[in-house]
Length: 124
Image (spheres, rainbow, N blue to C red):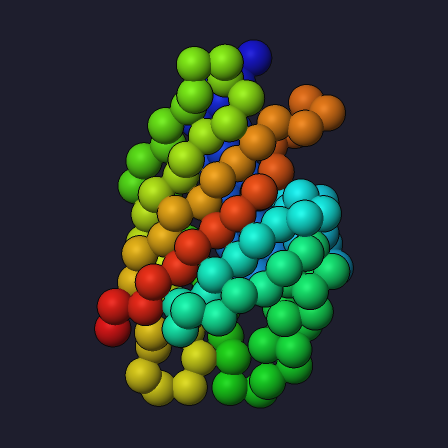
């Protein structure tokens, strides 16, 4: 059985691959339906449908390449049902690239880890 932190890291790597392939619809199962996402400039996106629409819009931009998130740490709650993932992110698009720090809250739902909320902070 895969340890929860390893499962979350693996799911993050898979989301990176789907983003690099510009496959917005395939990202849907990674998000809770009521996900809350604060983007790097402080904007708020509510709900999985809106998050997927935002990805699709970015993928349609010919200057966009990919987002990469690199996990630095994963901490679990005592029950093993929620986790906090912290890391670094970079958006590769029109020059210059933009990067910063992020925190994602994951929860276990029907045996799978899904993203409940994410906060991205642009630092460069």
